[in-house]
Image (cartoon, rainbow, N blue to C red; front, side, top):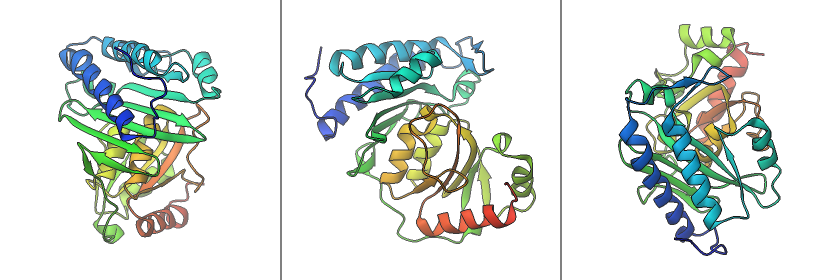
Amino acid sequence: MTVDQDLDLRTHSALEVLEGLVQEVAQREVMPLFGVSSPRLKEDGSLVTAADTAVQAWLAKELRIRWPQFAMLGEEMPEAEQRVALQSAHGAWCLDPLDGTTNFVNRLPFFAVSLALLQDGGPALGVVYDPVRKECFKALRGQGAWLNGERLHPMSWSPALRRCVALVDFKRLKPHLAGRLGIDPPYGSQRNWGSCALEWCWLAAGRAQLSVHGGQKLWDYAAGSLILKEAGGIATTLDGHPLPYDDLVPSSTLVARSMDLYEAWRAWINHNAGWR
């Protein structure tokens, strides 16, 4: 089956097609291997499983059939091919076929398939699917974000920083900042679940209010950052710059569910953490 190549990817019809593809491959290739797939180590020390490679291969094929004008940038591709994909004039699919592979291998039920289309300097659409909970998060640039068809809204009010739940990945932060966050945090409680893509979506859904990470890769945040933005959230690098969507170098991320929270969160980072 093919879809008209001219189907405008800025429409809900196209987003529904992509949502269906992501859900199909996750249920078919990911869930049967949950907790039983033997991993191998990649050169960078991270894990990869048969589920990672199967999802990437299947989606690359299906997307090429439907929209051959777009390049494919998948996590499990050689870096040289990823760099070529980033230069595509029409745009590139940015895929993390299984975000949270360590969780997946150890039967921790927190992982997702993440797909974004990078166009005109950033993500034009994003889909993140959690096959355990059957939760599908999606967004269209400038049109909104949804969870299983229900629109995700901006926060109606901002709690004090001390009342917030923060998603903090300590191991990739500079030691001084990690230490200060551990000893005297400005938030009320801290979590880290091991899937960046899904954590972006849980922030968008209001299940946490803040996050900080020392180094996410492009496929970790391409889809999730759009979903968060369309739900009213704010995201930058630790030094306040826009997130980069044209580079494979890992980027720090500083995220909040509202501008008020973001300003308070960044002020604490800048004035109390000495991360520079």
